[in-house]
Length: 364
Image (cartoon, rainbow, N blue to C red):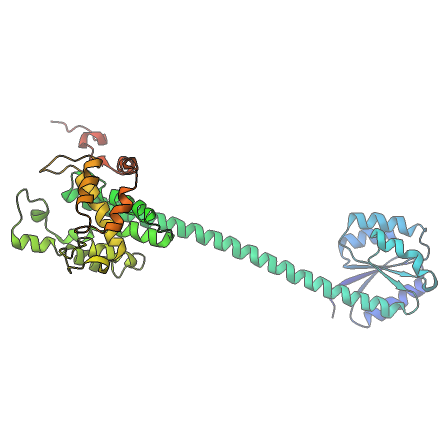
């Protein structure tokens, strides 16, 4: 059974009734109107297809039909016209007043075929509309998912930075060491021609978390003012492996483990924990080694004042081929020192004094 309502309009009741009976016998719903003004009301309310009997291309029905089509442009109109004068109604097609012309001879079959074609077209339009609506819904869901993922990513990044900032405070006077070397490593990796964003993110995160293992090193060792004993030094040398073990099962950061595990390896094989050398050390760890040393030389330590960036560069170049990968050092040396100074200014600040937090004074 068709779910379309066919509106029949025509003054010839016999022909109109015959067509209505033919369509209803095929389970098509039919509404009948005597004239087009009345049809306009029905068309507005319920009709899916309008079938109108036209006898004169210049008769009063044509202007009325034109007005109706302007009001309801999407309403399909099938015009039943005299067989011997059907060509005279072609301008109705050209103007868009009628969508199909059916000769009166055999009108029942012609109208029925046109209605079925219209049902097919309407079904295709509904399918297309449903698909478009589904695509819009999926797009909205994708946008929402992307926004939530971005928010989670930002929360994740902030958590990493805050975790390492808190750890920095245990043994470094200047706040921001991990954040600084993370930025240094990212920029130096780009200078070496690395453009893949995921690789750059992993290098930055690995640099940020490089000292995560120090959370397991006692303060009595980390903050010891004098030289470490051999046993204490062995405990300190465990922090790369401890840090790697800490993050290796965290799905979002396990790719960064090579920097954490290898950040104290040296190019000549004298580093720890595994004594790797040359290209056996992952490239991201070789990049980090230069970045970390740059920050160490230019930072304040209890036993010395910070050096300037020019001195730091000279020191790094001096150890090219022994402590550092010559290719990484060459890329570092080609860069303007102002780049590193600007990063240092943006990522590092002195730990604020307690009275800067606006705490209320303690009453005595």
